[in-house]
Amino acid sequence: MALTVKQRFFLTILVLAFPLSAISGDPDIISDFVVPMEVNNTLLDGNFFTYTGMRPLINSDPPTNFTVTKATMAEFPALNGQSVSYAVLQYPAGSVNPPHTHPRATELLFLTYGVLEVGFVDTTNKLFTQRLQAGDIFAFPKGLVHYQFNCAENDFAVAVSAFGSAAAGTVSVPSTVLATGIDDEILAKSFKTDVYTIQKLKAGFAPKA
Image (cartoon, rainbow, N blue to C red):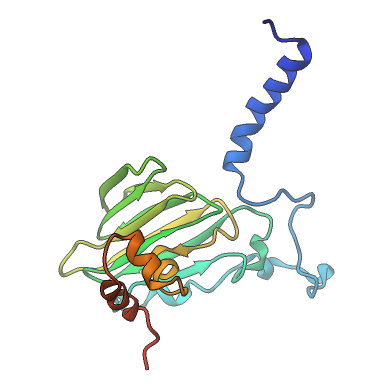
């Protein structure tokens, strides 16, 4: 049956709207930028659009623990409505950024120093992996579980990640599963193991005394 003009128009709108909805992370704003209520708009200058929280990283010693330094809307209010944020990730030798997701944004990771083994799992449970060298960029699609591992035994790694949202959000898979009070028996059945194993895993996420 042939489509009417109205039906064709409707389908065209759907086709055009789909990719926009798929890539959007933050709501559009109708002004050039968003100023917090407590800030006097008439006194704005370049300081509002400058974030200095990364300065300590420039001359810092190699990391001893996996560290993430963020520049999101929470730390840098000028990003509100701009659909972008950054993070600097520092990996000591042998460290891992555990499996996690960013529900509101794709992550574009640029490895500036060292080596990393990275990967993500798509919605068909296919694992995509890569070994990155300094200068490489890797894309982690929005909402998919992914990780990074510094496979070097004696050297650290540093990466800069860009996100298509001012508040990409981070959901840690291990913490979400093991540190949020889900019943041990439910977890044991879900992972096809026993309660003792689940309790040992949970113990690793218990607050340190």
